[in-house]
Length: 431
Image (cartoon, rainbow, N blue to C red; front, side, top):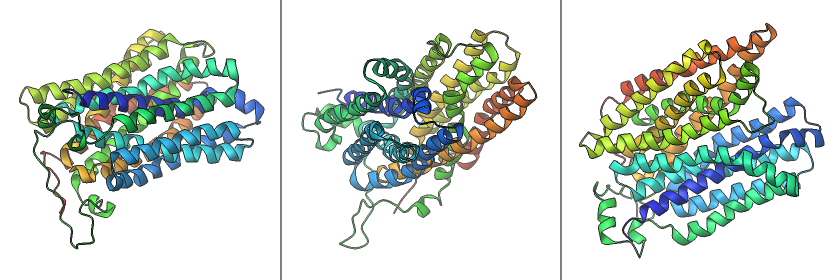
C-alpha cells in the first residue's frame, strides 16, 4: 500500500472520538443520576474532580510507559482500561462508586494523546505531522458533537446503565482494528518501499547507547532530565496556559448562552453545534497551514511558530464578546476562538516531535499534558469564583466578560514565552 499512513490517522481519529464520548457521558446523564443517587452539586464536583486529578497523573504514567513498551502495546492498555472503567459505571450503586469509577476512567483515558502523538511521529515526516495531528485531534470535537446525540437515544431505549455499556464497547471494537492494522513502519509487511522512504525522509535518529550490556538502549529518559531542557518548558507553558481555555469552552459555554441569551438547553442547540463544528475545521486547518508552509520550503520551526501566532491573534477578538447583543454574533466570535485553539493545539503537539527524539516523545507529551490538566483544574476555580461573585450582584455577564478577556490574551502570552524559551529550532540531544 502506498498511503498506509492515513489509515493510521483514521485509527487515531476514531480512538480520540471515543475518548471524548466516554468522558462526556457523566455530564449528559447528570439530570438522571443526581435524582436517582441524590447527588448534591458538591457530590458531582467531586466526581468530576476525581477524573481531572487521575487524568493529570495518568499522563505522566502513560507517557513514560508508552516510551518503554511502545505505541501499539501502550495504546492497547490505555483503551482497555478506559473502556472497562466506562462500562463499570453501569454497576455502580453509590456516589463513592462513581468517584472511583471516574478516577479509573481518567487514568485510562490519559494514554490517548501520548500514544497518538508518538504514532504520528512514527508514521509521518515533519512536513506532514501537523496536518496528521490536526486530523486525528479533530476527533475530540466530533466526539463532543456525537455524544449529545447518541447518549439520549440509548438512554431512551435501554436506560442509563446501557449508555455506559454500549459506549464502552466502542473501545473494544476499535481495539480489534488497532491490533489488526497498526505496526511501526519498519515492521509493516505490506508497506511499499516508496512510502517507507517518504516516512523516513527526515533521516534516522541517533539511538541512545546503553551504558551497560543489561541496560535497554531505548529505556525512557528520566523526567528530571527532561525538565532541564528549555524545549520541555516551552511545551509545558504552552499547555498550562491554553488547555484551560478549551475546557472553559467545552463546559461553560452552555451556561453562558443560557444565562446571557436565554438559550433552552433542553433542546438541541444549533449555536453550540456550530461552535464545535468550527473547532474541527480549526484543527484540520491549523495542521494544514504549517504543513503547507513547510512544503513551500519554510523552516520547520518558523512554520510552526507562525501558525501558532496566527492562531493567537484569531483568539483575540473574543474580548469583544461583551459588546454583542445577539447569540449568533457571540457564536461567530467564540467559533473563531475555539477553532483557533484547535489550530494551536495541532501545532503545539507537533512541536514536541520536532524538538525531541521519538524515544522521549510520549514522556514529554505526558509532562506537558499533565501541566495542561492542572491548568484545567485551576481555571474552573477562578471561573466559578468570578461567576458566583457577579451573579450575587446580578451581573453574571460581567463575570463572563472578564473570562473572555483572559481567554483573548492568554495565547499571545503563551506564544511570547514559547518564543523566549525556544527562539530557534534545536533538536534535543539525549545521550
